[in-house]
Amino acid sequence: MSSMTDIVFLLLVFFLLTSSNVTPDALNLVLPKAKGKTTAQQNASVSITKGGAYYVNKERVSEYGIERELQAALNGQENPTIILRAEEGVPIEKAVLVMDIANKNNFKVVLAVRPN
Image (cartoon, rainbow, N blue to C red):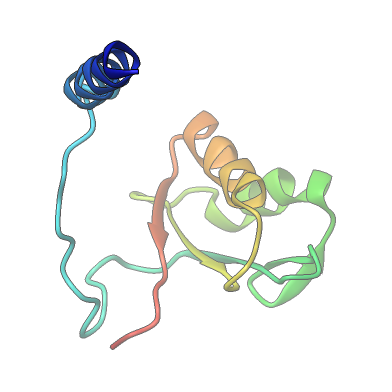
């Protein structure tokens, strides 16, 4: 019985030591609280509701129409910026969709947060 305990203990130590190496690029950061206003100029906003509805500048659009609406709204802007407002509880895939569109079109994305 004691040999089984020794094996379990060694496995526990092994996993504790190697678990910190699983994500070597991850940083343990304490992020600041969101106070005040953002300094980025808002050119367009994308809002996502819990129900999965997308809005570009308060106008409801389909998931497939987001890119076209953003390109029209940000056409000719010097530093095109999108304010992403995702309601609490929205699946991350929906926010990533907007971020992918922004990345493909070289738009800057600012995530709106609730002030403390």
